[in-house]
Amino acid sequence: MGVPSGPSRGRKRDADATRAALLEAARELFGRHGYEAVTLREIGERAGADGSLVARYFGSKTALYRSAVAEESREVAASPEPADLASFTAYALDRADRRGAPGPLVQALLSQGHAPEARASAAEEMRARLVAPLAARLAEEGAEDPKARAEVLVSCLTGVIALRSSGLFPHLATLSPETIGAMLESAALSQGAETVE
Image (cartoon, rainbow, N blue to C red; front, side):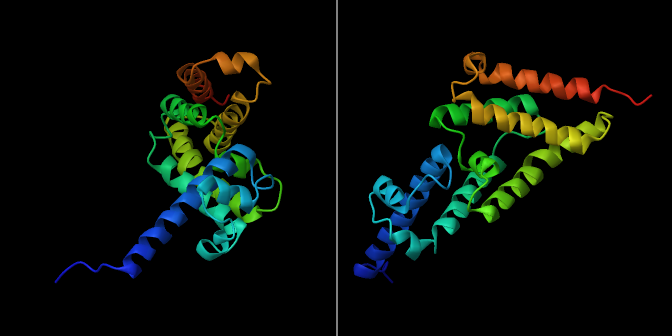
């Protein structure tokens, strides 16, 4: 038996390519500008497709946003172990530096606007993939209130990612991702060393 060919196979490949292009364009634009500032037309233009195709492939702008955040979360899952805060910080900052923007996951966390489901999903991803492993490590090291400490450290990292390219903090922009990672790791270690009297 041969491999099916012809128009239906070509349309499926084109549909898959268009969907992937729309998702990649959305990740880039949402990651740079956030949900509210990006239009479907801009996404379509960046993808080389008609923005109205978002409805066909994703259902809505909000669903596309959730897909962009979910895709970002999958990449975070394949990153260095979050409990190794120095390495994870360097990885996250390198990614943000390469794209010149915080990315859709951080943008979703910071958003106060029209995509509360995406924001809640992003927060859940951050808790599951970053906060929980870091809290487990801090608990093993005897830190007081390891979950709260992990949330503070991950919030610091999120703020650094969001502000590093903003130009608002010139010294932050000059530090290497590894240096910032070492600073956060130092904060984690000093907090883990505290004891209750």
